[in-house]
Image (cartoon, rainbow, N blue to C red; front, side, top):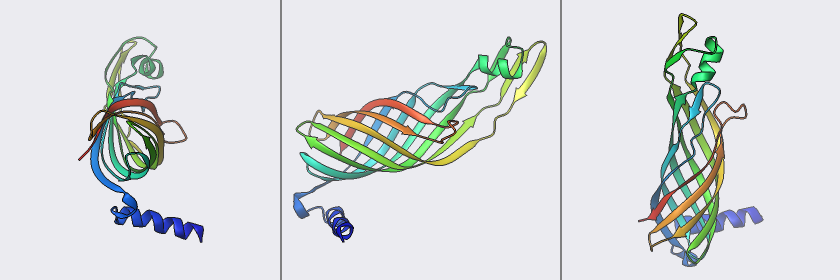
Amino acid sequence: MRRNVLLAAVLSIVFNPGSAGAQYGQGGFVLAGQGAGGNGLVDARFSVEMGYTIEVGERNGAYLGGRSTLGIHPLRANQQGLLDLHGNGTGTVKGGGGTLYDTGADIEIGYGMGVVRAYGFVGIHYLQQFVNPATIESGGEEVEVITRRRDTITNGRGLGVHLRLTDTGALVAEHYRGGGDDGVMRISGTRFGLRWIL
C-alpha cells in the first residue's frame, strides 16, 4: 500500500509539475575527466561525457530527475603490454588505439541547499569498445594483432555535487562507476564540467 501511495505521489509530480509547488526543468551537461576502459593492451587517456537532463523539484530541497548520456573514452595502445604478449619485449608498435563508448539513461535523486546541490544517480548503460589493429615488429618478425569489438549492457551509478553560478548554470563534479564484473570494460573515474537548465 505504501509503495502504491509513493508511486502515485512521484508520478503526480512528474506529470503535473505545477502541483506541490514543484518546478520542471530541461537542460544538459558537458563533463571531462579521467578516462576508463583500459586493460593490459590499451590505456585510457581521458573522457568526455555529455547528455540531456530533465528534473522536477525545488531549487532548495529534494528533486527527482532523469538524464540520457553519451560518454567517449579515447584509448591508446599499451606498447609494452603488446610487445610482452606478442613479441620478445622490445620493438615497435603501430596502431592499436581505440575508443570506448558509453550510452545510457540514469535516474537522479538529490537535495539542494542554497547554491549547493548534492545528488546520486543510477541507470542502465551500453558499453562498446573498438580497438584498431596493431602492427608489432619485434625480434625481426612482424605480427598484426586484431582485437574484436567488445560490448556489454551494465549498470552505472555515482555521486555528484553542483555549485550554482547563475540562475541557469552550475559547475559540476561527479564520481562514476560502471562496467562488467570481469573488469574488461569497467569504468570508474572523477569528472568535472558544466550543467545548465533551459
